[in-house]
Image (cartoon, rainbow, N blue to C red; front, side, top):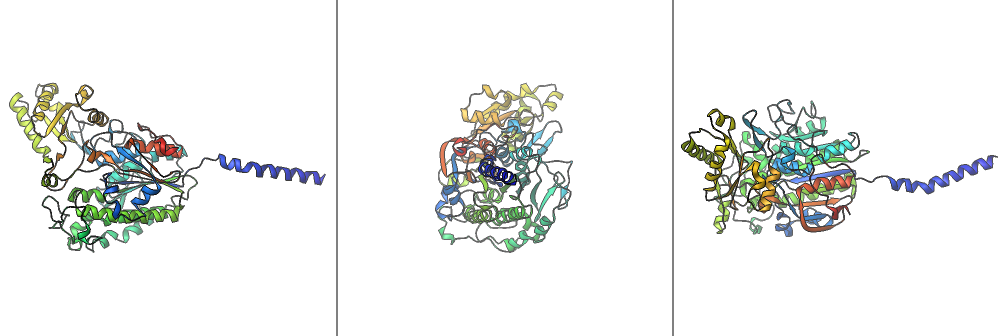
Length: 544
């Protein structure tokens, strides 16, 4: 009897041992950690322009061991920071997300609105208003929100960036935390917490920004090796705040105390600082050690500050990317050690590109120029008043859109319908402006299809303007020094798109993909619902 009982137990164990692998295999496999890296203002061509100068462990490793969608384009205008970060993490466009620019004009309150403004929350970690921010203006979920929803909020989701919009909008509504930079410290808002964690206070107490600013910025290579860039001293470059020269070495240590923490943004050391904080977040929040997948969204912001100041053909931007390459190599090595090779999924992209400085273009007989939106608004208002008697018909020009003061026009016994054709006609008379269209009639406008589709995707009836205008390539709103972005052109809209790590086989594709495809592809890899406003397509070559 005992023998028979023991034999039954033994048989049961054999069955369990045989079946166990099948049960194990049936469990859904996911990475321990997802890391999103958005490099602010990184043109796609930077992957290859400096390729031979990069080391083997940074950008080149991502290209070699990862998957590259080489023809990834932004499918909307304007191509600005807030919109780009939102699009990458929502898979959606301004027409749906509500994030139509870094700023927009709110007709209800009759004032300009910043994308992450929230008067109902307070700053945590510093004094002042820099922390009165939240994702409240975002109308849809992010892939981080969907990850949290998929497992009843067990996943940790954290956003990090020097810029508040680069941390908040990627992290989403339900994130555990978003941290951004203010006066030498990492801060947040009461949307996320009422006090900073001890580890953040400890990190802030080190004053790493101050330490970095006590040293000067010299080129990482001998300066004569930078033959992919213009000469160092150019009149169309701008200066770092607190400096009087545009040339190396940049005497950061000589910048006044009142400026140094703000000037820090326009140095490559702020990128190192950001990734150091990202490592601290992984370490102290135990990201990747959860029972479910965690998510870290990191935005590298100083590339944008430096690019705006010196332009994409400067020694400063070349040196910044050579340094960033080393920082990325260090970060990947850290992830390999801390999370484990093959245990984390990483993607890298950019929120937009950038135009060459018109002064640089003209220097080489290439077309380009600038104009001033404020001057254009004054000119429109003067002309409209002369023709109709209507005063201040144009309320503002923002995001290359004209906002009419419809209420003010009505109070003067006129209608916006009378003014709109005048605005369009006056804009078209400008030599640098090619087209001007009424936005709520964009579907009937005669425009090249890529431009038209981008305008449709960017138009949000509640937050966009009334008339959109386009202009010649190489032109933008700005001064004679430095540069900017925001347009449909490939220099602003062609971005890197790399996937690396867990579940990713090396490869590349050249078919057209879009920024909106990143979030649904990540969602597919994680086997979760795509974000609530997503219009992107899964990059099937990657998930296969």
